[in-house]
Length: 188
Image (tube, rainbow, N blue to C red; front, side, top):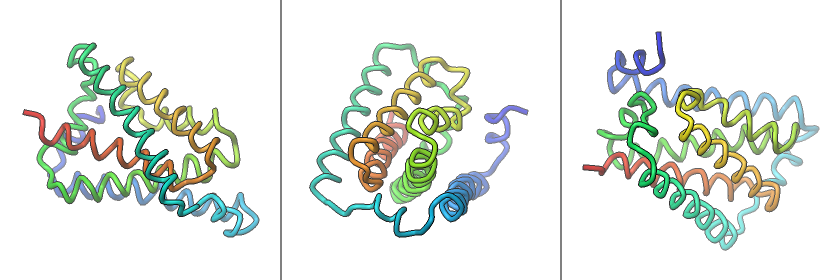
């Protein structure tokens, strides 16, 4: 059974549970791998820098670049190019603003801690970026979506390479997801 068929069978409550569960699973994997791969938490925590100016300027500025890129793609390519089987629409369309903010923040934290904070630090930029793109498996059959997620993944990975600050990549990831979630939610 295809992923979109499974999603259609879930109630809204079950869908929310599965979404949150999948992200908490990524967080648990990240924490376990960090315990195994890093000599101490202190080394891992060196990648968290609360420099508000950099977080806002680089994190939000980078997100704006990606959002503009996505909006341009949406205006150039047919609507079908972005159809992921209705999954994103189902996730965001009828949800509360608070849910969208909370869920996209959870996604940004869990995915960035795993892909940048654990995998990229240990196995490198290219491996982490490709793995991130492959995890978004529902996009594999949609070339525009897949190329977009690959480019975004490499872009966020590059930001982490330059800044070595997970709070910047978490901010970038969050702003991208929350704005695109709001676009889906409020699109008429």
